[in-house]
Length: 467
Image (cartoon, rainbow, N blue to C red; front, side, top):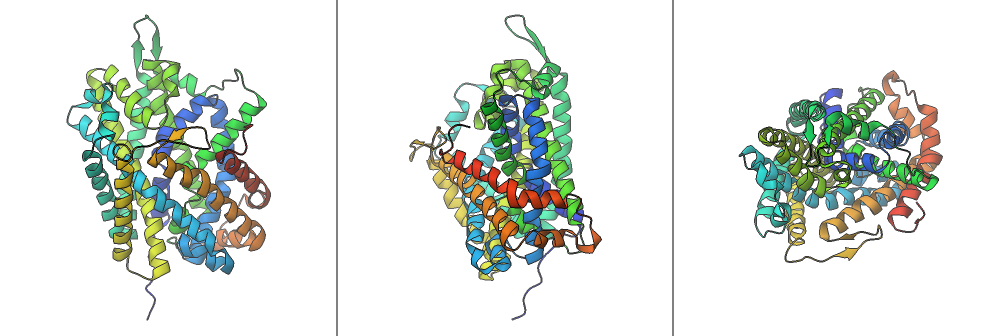
């Protein structure tokens, strides 16, 4: 039987926008601002930028190059590079399988809030208990999770060009405009609290970007580095098979190095602007204490209170904000699902329709389980990180804190010591492309990145407790 021709992005722009769409997700919006505020403002920003240009660049380049060289998805790409390393592909594919269900559940939460602000009911979301009342409901969270999953599945069913690429070319420019617009607005706001203290968006910007060395110790600095590395996994979508899958759709005549540089820039700028959107607004209306909010608490509790405090304009700002969050969640969820679907297609030689149908069912069943984890199946388990969590938190911990570092360490060992860095370098230098950070790449992939990743893994497992 003649093998079907593999789909590919029509050009570098399609790849860059799709990959950037994957990178710009909920991790950028609700995690990056919190970590920056927690880790000394500008100190974290500088450390993150340095790591993005070294550590992040290394992992991103490696995964995209593996994908393009093998023309395979994560489940089969590693075995094609080296026979006995197929297990790494299995783990890399398992990560998005675990992530997809709970990401769709969170996507359903975003749909709920977007609809609330779109219909003028935004102020209700700021009321005490609104968020908990919604997520512990029996039916509505499941319905909205399915709506979000249906949209993502529809895009995946349409394929690489008509689905992922066309979708990214429309949504990413709109997303960027919304991010910039909301960030600019956030800097212009002003508020006087009940105690007569006046704060402005510019005050919040200073709290965000100016380095805060108060109480900073050597241990504290190591914590900043580890947190910044952990954030890079979320920001660049590495160690979860996505960039291997997207890399397999990149044409051989594309300038890989240039495209990767553009993804780095796009992602870092949006991550920074996410902080400019959120930190000044939260600081203005809630003070420095409000900047401690994180994850769902920041997105679905603190920010609605900020929008409510803005008065009549708050509903419009909230609507635009949650539209932006919805777009970011969709572009990321599409990439997560594609990593699984492409893996099924390559491994089992089935059509895209069948592969997408299988993954949709898996995600739907998993999503229902996650929803039930907030009501009928609720329980709490203490995680090695020291926090308590239920089903969603456990799935997140297994995928992001355990499996992703394992995939990244394994990838570094495979490329750095088994098949050698020249495998990636030669792929990056195809068609005369200049690999400007070649020496840095070799040092990072062989020595620095594996050590840093091991530190992250040991900390996640609760073994390394002094950081």
